[in-house]
Image 1 (cartoon, rainbow, N blue to C red):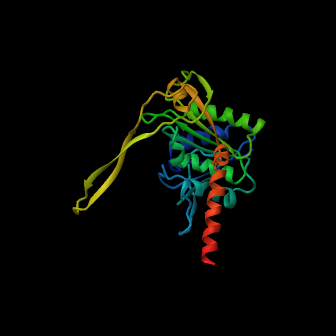
Image 2: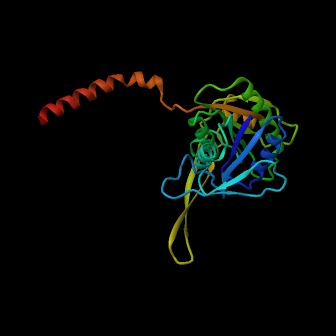
Image 3: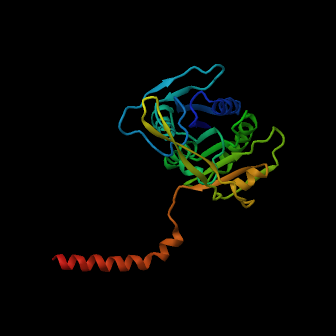
Length: 267
């Protein structure tokens, strides 16, 4: 079982290294770590096209797996890991463990989730894992759960084009209330830009804000995590809305008529 382990918090982050150590203890697991050389949170699915990527093997005390740092984005790490680092095809891509949850609309900005999506784009099952805690995070329970989920995914598989977005609640070890398969919440943020002035007198802006803590249904990722449950949300790569496609068919005919008429006038 060849696993590519990536993240967006950087190659030295505690979440990544805790998960690496846990996966290394799994029988038959062959783990390769390819991660950004620095913090790359909220980088979305950006990839590097206009500058070279450099890979450097780094020494992590106690690591049995090869660990590489890349001067690129999380999605870069998945892509270069699978196409240039691994000695053969990957069986699974795991991204995490992220510090802080990736819930609701977070998945559109998250480097953690995007690194897992890149695995699915390349045809490999993928899991993104986040711990919904910022203060004094203990990654060991999330790592242990991820190892169990890996066994299940390897045994039963995932549908093509689907990844699992896992969020572990910030509760002490042994206090997790259970597991829930969820849908994405409508969680959003109350964003604002703080206007500041640098030492040279130039104005700059710093994005700030807080999540809108509206009540969320129990079957959503936010609702589950608030209830102390581990949330597993299946995300599909295909973003097209099949139902709306049928609703827009009349638009197609109307627009086609206008294009035909305009073409006739020009001729």
